[in-house]
Length: 499
Image: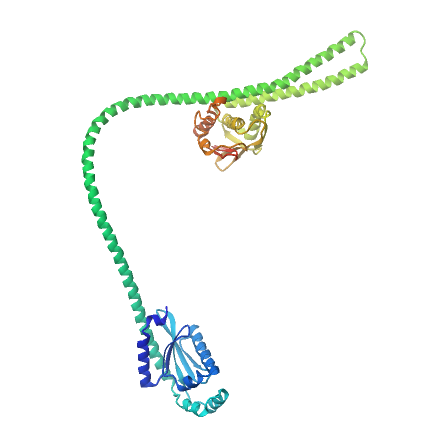
């Protein structure tokens, strides 16, 4: 906010000139940048000598600066002897609480000056001594009380002019704002009036439409009565159909579970054939060793070397037989545990890692034909009070889904099953690093009968069964995340119940 923008400078200059003509007072108003806005009555000693000589003019500017700086630091009144020997006084001018300018008066003495000082000053700067002293004699000697009255009068007058200017400025801004609002409101009213005209036209059209609609509604009421009768019949048929669908859904889920179990049976049976076949071979070899030894003994040809050879072969054969029978027994035990849990529906308390290791053992016949590595990430002491059969179904279906869809024949990769807990859930995360799926397929993987390998034997029920077991049976949640070339991840959250 500038003082010159708020005050009529010419009018204030005229007022100061008139006051000087009657009182002889020297006055000036400078803005905060040092610009002289108003000046009147300056003494000849200043205008003809001090401000006309470069060195003394520099002293004048330094004095003005010192006065302004002291006022800017918060002083409300400042009396200063300028560097050329005269007294200057200044007060700040505030408008609207803001310091906008400084009022100066001066070029006088409070006491009679020492003429010798000014004689030396005239000689130092090359002034005409007589003319310089004559100008000195014109400088008035005033009292400080007089100066205070002058300052008070003109600072209040300048403040009054400024406040009036500020009021005019604020009024103009308010008027401009009001004119703008009136113009905007006028435009709004014109637009509203046009809108009302359009609405009236639209209402006429609506009334015509309502009359047509009423006539149409009368006919529809008659039709609705007929439709309601048909709907009652359809509702009865729909209820019957829904019951049938529920039964069918339960049968499909049971069929898929049996199909998965059948796949496990085939795999485990093939896997057991190897250790059992080896056991039969070893037993046949033992029988041959015993027959040979018995013949030697009956003929009286038994020798220590033959007996030692028999003992060595017998120990090796028995060791192989024991290993193969243990392997077969382990497979049978794991399959029995997994198969029984998939068939039962009772909640039980079990160690999750130990159970999943048995599930993976039943999946080994399928995994060993591939270049895939299976990683199980699960705490050793994690116990869940839930359905072990459903957990086996999840692990089996996820794994078989990856084997069927995620990798090309002979392609290497990693399948990861991570199980952990949060505050309220058992968290199951299954990931493969295979081909992945585009979004349109990923969004449909849980739909019944949706499959991309129907010509190769896929039924489209595996993940649908998993979805129903998780969401309906356990009130959990499941999601599938995948992208082409980024693999596939299934995230499952199951209620912990009481761990």
